[in-house]
Length: 269
Image (cartoon, rainbow, N blue to C red):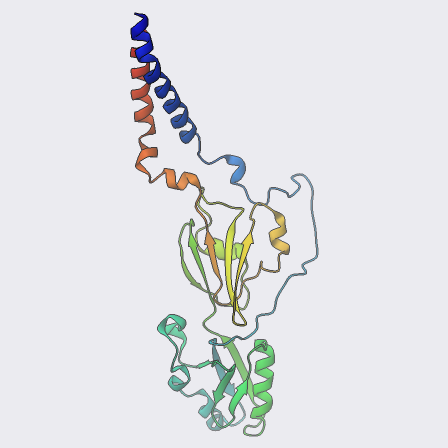
């Protein structure tokens, strides 16, 4: 009998270790405390603070602008509002919204746009309001009381990873925040890692990688809270997301049941 116990001791010990490991793996689910946003906000009081991180969108290379001109002379204004297919040459289909290219002027690699009669205008780094005023001032030589309407038409942000609806989302105005972009993408999944969201931004010939924490209210004061054209948000999935698709995790309950039966049989010896 003693020999039998010695023979079974090592297998039983291995089974015990295996059960502990499996139980540990099965406990690696989503903890509720990791789910809520902005957990450092006071719960029973009103908190107010000044908004100091608002940014004004500035025109960059490869932006596409919708520019329309009106004046007291409708016929003279029409030359500026004709189709602008030539202004979009060299742009890829990925950079152009097909529904919005009829009046598009693309900012070239030198930060310039080409307008009829006026020629090249440097607008990179300007706000849309400043660019509109600049163009309007130059049109005074050709039109009587010109009025310019200018809008960025390829403003978009990408959201991918562990969200409800990953995708590329067009922005209809000149401001969008991180929380708005995540809402457009169907919000973070319950399994998403909320304190390590990656923002990828290309600006001035450089690529930046910024980490954002949705657990903290400090996200609202971050200089990166408001997104820019072509920003990318990547939401990392947590361990629980992997557990839902990995066969070894899906079969945890079956393995546990089998091991429990085997351990019970062995213990009776």
